[in-house]
Length: 270
Image (cartoon, rainbow, N blue to C red; front, side, top):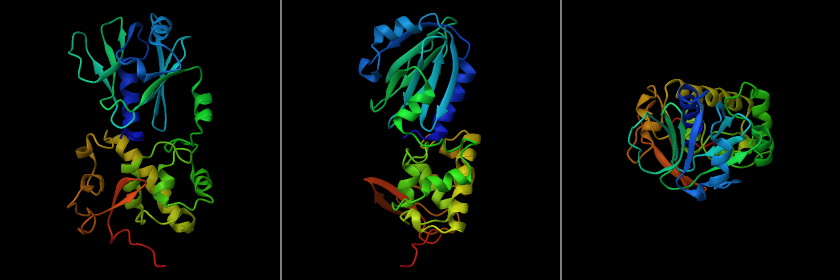
């Protein structure tokens, strides 16, 4: 599932290839993808408008067009953005395409159709209405904001990290990585963490996500780009801890598989 690093890469792709360009057409291959607007209305509103900006909050990408509103893009389980040159063959599973006057195209792909694109008037209002927590890599999300997000939470710390109303951007895969780097057992109750553990966790959260962005690695794509010492390449049956060599163990949380090192992330006593 695309997480914060993936969506940050999508944002940068849009910024590099599309910002400032005029939209010649907007094609909707899957009308069920859209929320809040019909394909015909969206086409009317966005034709001949310039794509002004791209923003990200957590796992949501916002594309703004001049006086035509903002598209909020959710990528679901395996959605992505792809840049297509003039006359380049379109890949499978394209659900929506922005075609620009220079022939360039920006395609939203979603093989499993779990995700959507919504036309909104204001990104900040949307974030508030959806109840999204602070973006995990925002400078405003400092240690004080982090401890406030954890305050009073009795759930497993991994569940809290993945709760988009607490912290926006972290999913199943990067939650495992953050907890591995912080040397914390994933099922520890959030309210059981002492000050030292919270500080380790906050530092790991910022470092892991920023490193993934810097190395242009996503949750499931380009993981070979990650530096040595990351757990993600070993999140599978038979995986070995990159730190101590112990066998990686798996567990279930909310119906999803997680991975950890029993030596580096021991279960707390009691």
